[in-house]
Image (cartoon, rainbow, N blue to C red):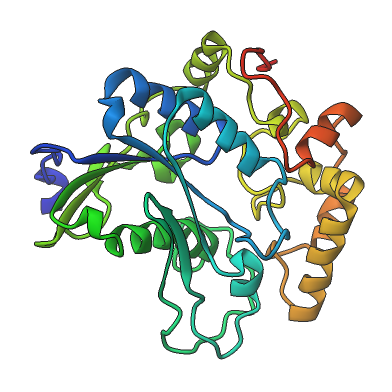
Length: 310
């Protein structure tokens, strides 16, 4: 009750900021966030980070075109872009059986670096839970948040640095996110560095996001044009029956691999249904072969002066 009556004051970002790290998934909210950062911050201090959910060794979960799309956007704005990933990505972590967590690879201005991989052996063999708790929804924690933190603490260029990590959550997205604070610490401050997290677009609405992107005349990720309501992994654990039905029809190999893993692990992504059962409950989105070819191509093909937001 005391906490409710006397809440902690809102944390303020203080001191000279050395670098702003924009976490860019390629989705609409992170694209809006990038546009906000370019307009409101010192662009000489901006760099963009993207986490490869499948790593370099797998193609189990994500969209083929995402990496190339992210590269194209950053090239258009002439912003430095750094990729990072957990070795083996989602698939290896899912299948971890009495093994340590994989090492983390991360690009830097001085080239590719690696850290970790020598921890205590443990076993996973379960899909992430469809909950907000990141201890069991491990895909976000292990493949994104931990990857970013590992990349930060293992770069000497960030020693004694004051950093701001920019992320694109919005209150409107969920009840859990409605309670987020706009500014917090991305990790506990130490004598080595201070790393803030700024959810800069927390109070923006979806209509505001789409309007800004439309005005920018930047193309959006093909997933939206194919009918997917949000950009995460193509085979996101939160996929609806309509999405699983679409994946089963258009990305059959990916669908069958995940379905086989559900059977082998005797554990389904959904607590009640297998993805086969979910797909049977849904109706696929309308099929567009041209967009499908773009989405499954590792080389993004749209010109960036073409508005593709509709």
